[in-house]
Length: 289
Length: 325
Image (spheres, rainbow over the protein chains, first blue to last red):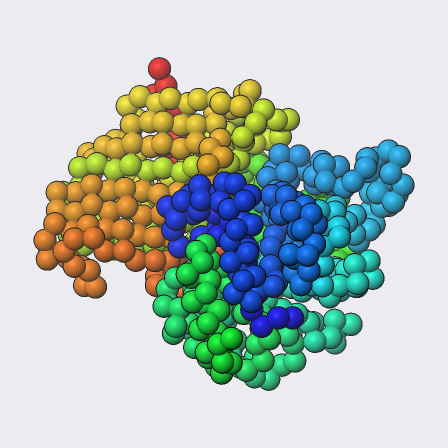
């Protein structure tokens, strides 16, 4: 994985601090061209990996990438699934069976063989595979070397002790997409421990890691201890703690930690993207190119 | 919501989940297959077999009264999802029974476990906003954004609708931050996409301390990515606007609480909310269950979100209904 990954929260009005900012972002990135322009700022700053949720609008971005293969030849996307709100809304509205019916390709209850059999025999892991396929459709022809499970899903399975399902996700994305599985979590130490003794070795785990301990369940010290003592590939997200830590201080802290393979950040402006990238290089001790 | 609660309880070091009950075969089969929780489809059978100390009730609201009553009769501590009961008259006997039996009772109004709203409460109680003369409580979100098929949430007899499901959070927050709602002067319940229930509620509320204000709630507003709840409080020496993430408060003079100054002050959730041990969808969901568990263990109070306080919210919901044109 690259040292720096570019995130997508700013494009989809996700702001952990201010609802006003969130709405302003939704206005700013109304057109896909605004997203593409910002992605290009990141690419020009040397950031070639875009980590994004499987939001409907990402399909348009993937289409643009496919149409411009030369420009995006080093470009990678790390899809993060599922797009939780889509399913949460569907669950409320349609129930579980209805949600599966809506999102599994083909008609599960009819001619589509795998789905029909899976549903009737309650083969939940096959249903999960079908849902992964449905989410991955938009990325066809785009390089997706790591595929992530979103934190709501990871953490729910973690809380319920459903190891088998997390392992099945890991195995399926490897088999079908020749990709590594990644897990986003708000409970990094617990998840690292959870994977011990499973076939998921040296897992890619993306978690909030920041100087003020924001969304670091169990506390900052426990996170630091886990980073020092356990074997896994950490990605630090929410490094600015939603804006609670100034960028310089925030990145200096994260760069000083051991075992962090990548840093994920999102920004809307060219200046902020360039500033973040150059700060990470500075604290990593890499000369500015 | 049930699944999230289950995951939080499953991760809690002081809790042993001795039974999970759901009448959805699909759901309970999946839980049985991939978790180690004992599973049931009949709640009475679960109670007989598992003999729990405490039960979390996350079922459609119309079943709350009878289930909670049964649990109290069996001397079991209860955490019920919100709203508490469908009809306020069902609530008082439960309040009395829980009190008389000394059982821990809590309802899932999770906003009170957010650092931001707790800080609002402190500021209001300091009296430094002066005489409070108006408030505006609102919640907007994209739950029903097109005509859609019916579930229990779209049936008024089962506790569906924006007033019961969405507005109850705001009303409960007003009760907690200011004073219990004692009446409503004119309400508009609007169906925007739903056939049988309200999708938006607009009402003028009067509180038991005499202050009046507005309630404006709409769950068919797709300009919000997710439910966004906020409250504005106007006083003679200050004004406060807070949502879950951001608290903005203006003070007229230097007479402010510690840590604030004259003019605008902004505080964020990040400064105000303590870290939890296990996070799923928001610190407040874990914090409210921690609070309940501590009360059951006898290690903490059972003062927030009691049946009694939740019943005040149910009563306010009836006032709002009654005040329709």
